Amino acid sequence: MKRFEQISLRLRLALMFAAVSAILFGAMGIYVYSTLKNELEQRDDQALIARVERMRILSGDPEYVETLRQHLHLYAHTLGSKENILWITNDSGELVAEINPAGMQRPALPAAGDPVLFDNPGAEPARLAWAHVEYPPGSLNVITGTLLTSRIQMLAAYRANLGLAWLAGVLLAFALGWEVVRRGLLPLRRLSLQAAAIHPQQLGLQLDAQRQPQELQGLTSALNLMLERLEEGYSRLSRFSEDLAHEMRTPLNNLMGQNQQALNHPRSVEDYENLLVSKQEEYERLARMIDNMLFLARAEKPEAMLQLRPLDLSELAGRVCDYFEGMAEERRMQMRNLAQGHLVADLSLVARALANLVSNALRYGAADSVITLRTRAHALGLDIEVVNQGEPIAAEHLGRLFDRFYRCDPARAQPGDSGGLGLAIVQSIMQMHKGQVLVDSQPEETRFILRFGPESIAQRES
Image 1: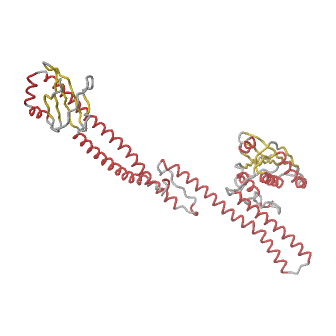
Image 2 (image 1 turned 135 degrees about the horizontal axis):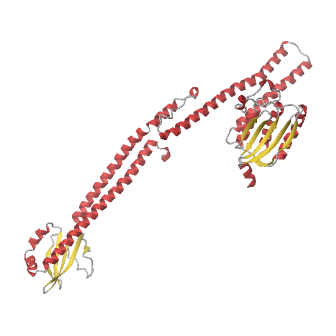
Image 3 (image 1 turned 90 degrees about the vertical axis):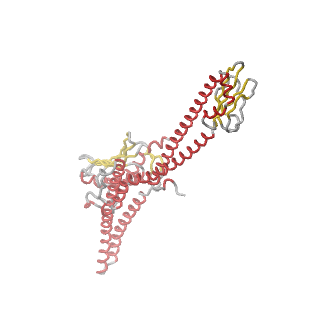
């Protein structure tokens, strides 16, 4: 059976419209039926009370009672209906006069103090009224009433008509709702057709939000934002493919050129050994590039698992500084560890991000300068900063600094570098930790900031 969520929006809205109409029409029908029923009951009760009062007045005249007894058929005609009933009895219970065309059984006299109006206690549905009348030299009991057969039949027919009208109204509401919803959803259909016409070669197209109804303007704006993100991702993927081809072509061309030279001329054993050493460097460069690309691909998967544990940032930063101490001395630079505090994160990934930033700072920092690792806690969480002195990064490079294979100065690429993937790996690591990496480049210093959210600190406290 289809789930309700899978039913078309048009059918769903038409059904809901019909359901609301059914409730509304049903409530209106019940109200009208109850009003009619109460009106008929009040009208019959008023007629019975008026008849009893008239009999009370007329029965006080002995001559009238005697005339009524002798000419009952005349009074029966005055009642005007075969459903009207009249009994008159004396104090001893003897029947003085009776008008009973339906042959209904005479009910017992009510006790003194009972209401004037009462329902027939017998099988026949009837509404009755009674009165005790003084009649010289004694008294009389007058019971008059009306059979309810016609009223019951009329109300039953009225209920049936109301039911048919209710059913017809619900069906009509469904049909009208179906058509109204169809017309109301036309803008959504037009929007769907516009969105379906967009393909990878036309991701730059924008849907016109101003021509959409107010309810669809938010959706249209969201679709336009999605298209912008898709276009940006598609462009980045295209650039990535081009950069990947360029990065892999260089070592492959080197390997092919070396092989061609070695095959064209006889070489000594020492030359072949040097050739193998040179090739090994290119192989290592390709291996690092492939490893970095595999890491980036795995980091983008939602199921990438983090091995979170409390980290001592001072100890972690100290290990990174010790590892790069020799490289820093070769470049006449110093390492300074000012990091403090604790963090809940993946040790290997955070260490890799710091290593990439420190390696980048050593490559582009000025000689005889200091590379500083420090931390700063704030309302947004915790920052780990890697600071170096040197030439500032130009503003045109800041927007693409974390793109894959992007280099500010390709001429400064070295055999042991990350192939332009180092900062992209740092960004992926921070995204895995639900944080972000920032850069602030000023004339006096450049800061790379790893910003972890407050949840990375709250987990340790719990």
